[in-house]
Length: 78
Image (tube, helix red, strand yellow):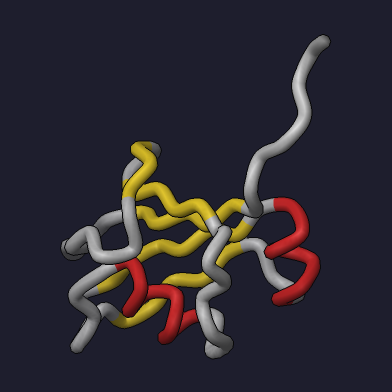
């Protein structure tokens, strides 16, 4: 089982990498993916997506999924 993990913006800078492919053995949820790949506690405000759909950290993952982590989105047009 393998899972592709992508990191964006400040998370990418903080971890020093933009992508990982992890062995999904023992990985059941998005939180587990973060813990195995980033090896630091999951910040409360990080957004996650599985296969391009925003999800909560307790979302189950499967073999072949792509999990992405984003910093919180702010700003906009006034």
